[in-house]
Length: 393
Image (cartoon, rainbow, N blue to C red; front, top):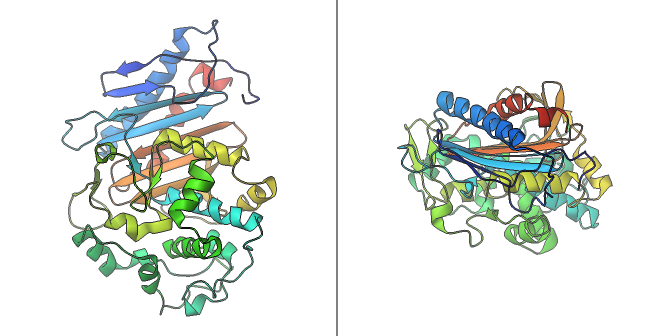
């Protein structure tokens, strides 16, 4: 149990018929019943989450979203809206979403575990592992915090177009880095910040070379199993869940081709992301992951301290961002510091954030590109702040 005073425990399932949502305490929450708690608090929380989800769905155009929150000792999850843009199936709490760049935090944890084992150093240069001539002097730390100056391969139009037109293409990570091999660095390494998917593909190759294990094995052995993540996979590099559980995504914003349906069989975008963005998961599992990380179950305290050393990193796409650490965004929302990551990938968006000073973790996932997941998260937090149990947890 966490140190905060337990004020609320709900062991009910509420069907929120107006938006097709199911709200339940998520699995393995281990919440002991408190007989003095009435159903009123549960009603308040369920309706706060419902209000935030309905408002977001109405103005965003997203088919559906999945939310999870853990505050103090208590945890809740809900699914709202629909699985498809024709509104034929309600969203479900066991739906699995592509979470895009939330993968970067997973990759950073793997690399930092190798560092704490002495198999790698944050100050090692990358020239011996990846074939990027202009970046031979870039360090592992600079890859992790996007201060390397290496351009992002995903900003190039032709490979993006090819990935859309060939939905079953299997990209090799070396092919992704080859897209920027002849390009000069954007700036002298360590002097500025520029978010780049190339950094995290390179980190995946380095982790595999150092460990002798595939990234699929590293994620599973070092994070997924130790953190008890039962609904998280690295696709298509390992056998995943039944295809029917993988939600269809809708791409309308990243490429100018109108709305495109991103089904489970269209896996080219996953291999195009690799260790920068190919994990699939649920909002409850993302909460479990972030809590395992910040509770010190995945990294030693000294390494977690390194991870949370932030450089100045304003991001026009995420106005709330004030810094970037080693695989972590730092946001400020209503005076609260949040640490975690957001993700955008064709057809999907996700976010998971932990508030160290306020003892809560929140995650969201949806099946629309440019989901504005940080905005969704802020809306949920705004509604929850009006709930009495939240104010005193």
